[in-house]
Structures are given as C-alpha cells and as structure tokens.
Length: 271
Image 1 (cartoon, rainbow, N blue to C red):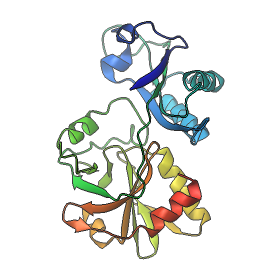
Image 2: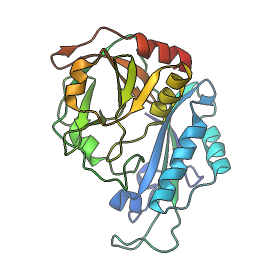
Image 3: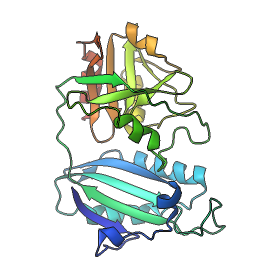
Image 4: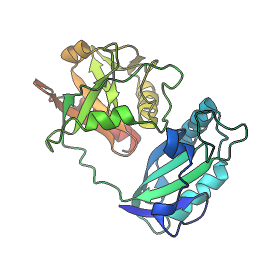
C-alpha cells in the first residue's frame, strides 16, 4: 500500500494524474530506480543506494538529482513511519514522441514510501527455474533501469504461493540472479556469486555481503556461474535490499539444510 509520494518535491493531489503521459519513463522505461528498506528512522545503506542511482543516471546520460534534495524528500515521506519500503524513480522526464532524447532533459523525480513486508528470516525459501531468459547487454548490465519486462514475464510464470522466487539464466545459459534478488552459493570454502558482466543488477545488499564477507576473512569470488554449479553448492542464499539475506531450502528437486554462512552474514550486517 502506498503511504506517501512526492513527485518533483510536491505531493500530487491525484496519483492517477501525477505523471504526464509523455514522460519517457512511462513511454520507454527511460530511467532508473532504487528500492530501499526504512526501519526505525534509518534507511539501510542509503549512501550505497544513492551512489548506485548516480551511476545509473550517468550511464544513461540523465542529470543526477541533488543528494541533499533526495535526503530531504526521503525524510518527508517517512515522517512518523516506523518501517517502510522506499522507492526513488528518476526518469529522463517529458519529451517529444520518438526514441531520440532531447539535448537538455529535465528529469522527473519520484520519492515514495510503501508499507513494508514482514520478514521471516528463519524460513528457508523454495525456488524454481524460470523459462524467461535475460538478454545480454553490457551497456545496461549492473544498473537498475526502469525496463523490467524480463522480470515481469518471469514472475508471471507461476502462481503457486509455495514458491518464493525463481532463478533466471541469460540467453547463453549462465546463472544470473533471481527475479528480484541476487544469488550466492557457498562451495569448497568459498562464497561465489555471478559476476553480472552481461546482465543483472548489482544489488546494494549484494555489495554489502561481498564487503562484509571479505572483512570476515571469507574467500569471495565474482565469476561466471552455471546451473550445474548449484548441484555442488553446500549452501545457497538470496540477497535483496528490502528482504535482506534469505537462505534457500530447495530448488525444485534439489534441497539444502545448511544456512551457516547466510546466518553469519546476516548477523554481521544486522539484517
């Protein structure tokens, strides 16, 4: 449920009319976004989220919103809230019909707060493979751009409430991520995660896990992974800025019971 929304710093009187129909975010998915967890007056890893937002805008050639303005708007939409999911959207703004962007874009900026889901960190997740594949595109790999059609199609593949997430491969068959999470495996004493050089989002929680794992002295590698790598994994877990770190209990017929590494990382990060 939406709690509060600011569009370019103003509260819209009617959310249905909040954006012009010629906004390029709506027309072409021309923009970036961030989704964050707000708890007890603090946004988890806010600096990292704002840095990734900056990197995404720079990659797309969109003027970067002022950090102080975003922080003030976050404070406004979270006022009097105990917990929330925060979303920042930055599009290239309104423009003429056609793909070619104007030379002097005026970005649209949306800051919204939504009701936060409950986190059950003790329940191990049940996963499935998705048939939808992620296209390879080094130009867009890593950033959180607005075009999420591949993830939409992937999540539309199932409606079984017992399935929590789906793993996705790219068009060449490499393991990339889950539909809304990054994936880690622990094998032979090392923590491994896909390098995301061709597809996927470099999640903020993923980055925090890599950072803290190295501080804890773990062997950590970002490298190409394939579905068969899961067969030899001792432990599997997913990471997401809103949901945190969640241990995986099964992937179709494959099962895991170990959650030592994910529990250690969750405790170290306080998520």
